[in-house]
Image (tube, rainbow, N blue to C red; front, side, top):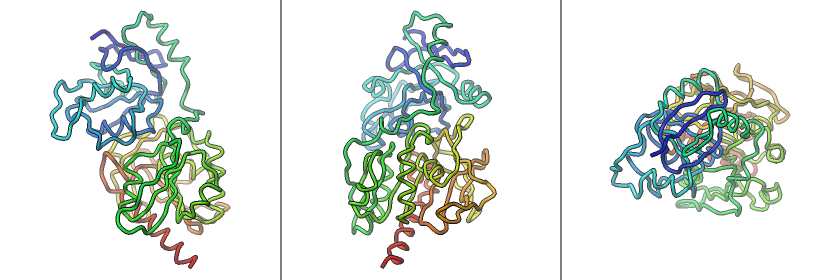
Length: 373
């Protein structure tokens, strides 16, 4: 193993050892607080153009398997761990973490204090980062290279991760509803969660038009998670406004939540360091219950945390808030069939406290079907 360096754009350098592929890579430095679920993190398209720092000190002991993949490839720009497991020990494992990172061309670094890096990012905010191994660059040259790399704010990335061709995930058992899912970086577990509820899911590219959606005569529209700045999704925001005007039941998560928020007239903003991991506490303001949820987002909706608001689509309210920092985590309209949450009800990996939201979507479509009968 050669020396490797993790370089932040504020000039801070952490020295470790090369791991997985050697070379250099750039992205936004983000940390994930999950103690498990690294495979789902790596294959989540929402992590496109991000260098993920795992706060858990030991990573890789359960290996990798094809069943838990959330997409067809690893999307992270780089992977940072303290102590990768030298042994894979799990009956479901089909390959090692490092071999899969190498297969996907991911540059990694090991032997750095990932919790010290995390504390640094929590204090100063998310920033650009580079990993350099087997390099002849000086410290100053590495810092300059990082500062020349693109920022996440203003980035348009959904087209990079979206499906190129539409596909169908059939309903399990009797088909009760048909849903169009707009793929801006969808995870495999999401349409699977809907199919388990009798929903036939038509996954469409992010650039799909209203005509293409209406041609399928869907009972509902789903807005997926995804990477990038929601403010850059101008065409999709316009599309969502058209869907709201037609009162087609709509459910958005993560990136889709932010896009719905902008369609309703709210601004979005970059969080200091975002929410990532499978242990984020969210309060349901309708029930006052606390849900432990899976997150991956660096932007948020600037809706009034006080609760109620008015839009051109009727009244609405903030349905969920983060208990860590008060960020708006859910929106719901009262006169138009639409709602969204900032997190992942399918989890994968993570707790299932929020899986009821798929049932809420079913109820929304059922009520709309009865009203239109």
